[in-house]
Length: 368
Image 1 (cartoon, helix red, strand yellow):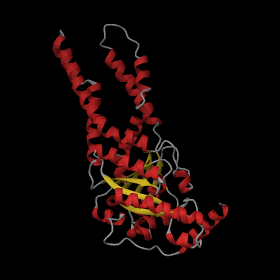
Image 2 (cartoon, helix red, strand yellow; image 1 turned 90 degrees about the horizontal axis):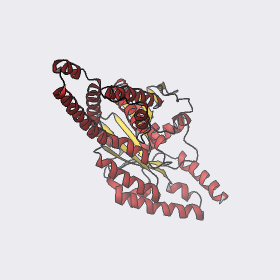
Image 3 (cartoon, one colour; image 1 turned 180 degrees about the vertical axis):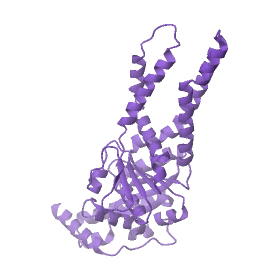
């Protein structure tokens, strides 16, 4: 087995030194390059998929590519377990946007939702006290605040709010914004809030208006109560949140400005996860960009090992999975990233990945 890995490493180095070929052909699926050309207004890109498939590398390479095109680009990690600092070899934690070294026009941030969580907690405390102050029975608001703050979706809501901040505020300063999302389960909950959040806000606004109207009806001093109702802070907050949400929702569902890319490996489980993930994202009306296939073993790398049994068997196994990808996801496949003999860390490695994403197609793809 050790000899097989040594042979693979050597053959990958040989394949890596060869030219980037074949290039995307006109009769193939729409490539990543073609997609970008067709969508000149494209601004917000998301990468998602099963854990460990290379979402962060794909997101970083996308961001690097656009920065090389002269576009001011922001790369934001929404993953609770951040990896951008490791990929760039630069400290990017702390929630502050920093310029990436040795990459003009590229900025990155590992989003920290803790400040949003605390802001949520404070706002909930204020609004619960505001809501309960009209009760004739003294009620301790702390249990209500604690229940709301320990809601299972509390942190997802906070991260969604941070994503909205980057899209509507911070994002205005950039030409391109790339989001590295969490693994599928967390990402689905995050983007799912884009639909659920709007329904919840609309219902809350309606309920609050009905409650305020009832208060006016039963008031002895209706004029004074009506003036207080007009300044109701809870209703004002809900309306403001709804308006903000409506703005970001219109962006998320716009295929000309937004694209969600699914990263997979040529293996059974990642492929199955991506297929389910695509169905989920479509149900939320999020604009889909396509699929990126990572860690593709190149034919020339295998042939260079002169028939080594393990590598040959693995290559043929991969061909079956590539056949599945083409059959089930073919029209959505936008790019391929080959398997490298080294870890993708640092700007030279990311430059190589970016070039492959926009130029490389494995020989076997056209033959499948």
